[in-house]
Length: 246
Length: 246
DNA sequence: AACAGGCTATTGTTATAACAACCGTCAGAG
DNA sequence: CTCTGACGGTTGTTATAACAATAGCCTGTT
Image (cartoon, helix red, strand yellow):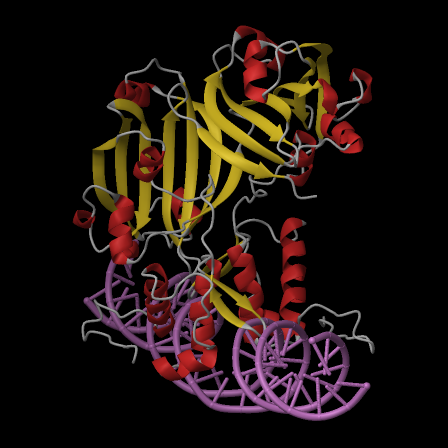
């Protein structure tokens, strides 16, 4: 198996560096589960021979995957596929996008769609005038057919053409209307599911849930969304990466 | 100016690698503002000559600082001190730092400190060999005198000089020892407090809690910390900012 | 005065090499 | 049967080296 090193005569098309190609090859093997969590990957010497590169090139490629959290190294023992890795939490995605990136099959069920006037809490949170038109969307979320949570979204009336413009996905409709939020503030805390919610989700009343309140904004700073998502504590978790800046 | 390479006869005290010493020297110059934001640092060749090491050693040291966000490189132009990074949720801070930034008065109570052998789950999570020495620190957290949560931390034995080196703050002790994690993967989910935990916190059994599992890493990728923090759902929340990258 | 090209200096990539430090396994001794 | 030590294999560190790719500055020409 060889990596390629090809530059077009006019220089307009370039092949990635050897170490980047090797990195991508390994990444594919990890994400497609050819290499399972906790498996040892081939040794540096074996990879160097297999791909016909030097050990230093292999190390540079593996360095990158270690940094991404996909691999973990132990001096003297080997290099192993890291246990479960999820996408970075700070990427702003919809439930659907989130589940797909986790290799799950997402689906949703509309609980209700309605138009009405903003309530005082929403008005404060979203910076709207009292009496403003808002659309409300309540959904139940599933992954692989199993209930995951409940979403209650409120969108200002001027961010959607109509209630009917939203079919499968709120973010898709907003994307088409040019009002998909590009920035959000999010607040997370643990809550207990009440009787109504627990009934919908098929879990005991009082079960722990993760409440994620999201306030989405347009590029010009206008609020475009307020969503409260309640996720089952036993079925949903968030991954994130932090860094220390002294 | 030379870096030292010194090993005690009994092997118990080791000098850091050349690249780590150079890294620390540069880090000090940056954080003490001897090198100001947007300044170019000496070239790789100049640093190699000044510290009497090879260019590859310089590159490895600078790699780490680039990764930490302290330096930024531009091919053909040079290496520059990065401008300050905005504070956000993704900033990796201790409970104390977090509370202070929220205008609260933090305090902690040690529940236990102990040394022992890593258990199988910790071994896998932290990439340690079975039987490795680890230090465990269990704490209860307060803000303004009110219980907020419980922390259970495990640190590899080689990341601290001793159990007694930790007084008020684990991160402070690690900072002094040069092993404070600079990057972390974090996983959040909602759980119910069990009887023991609820008793400690003075809340009803089964109350919802936010579990934050944090795996901290050193610049060279070695795991340095595994912490499970349980925060009361009614007293603690996390804020974050997301962005949408199409 | 502006633009283009050349040259020098910088970082990026890739190679070979040697040795240190750590890990795991196996064999031998008690 | 258990423990210890040796050995082979792994990753980590450091070095020298050559060339590619990018950036910036300076000089010459228009």
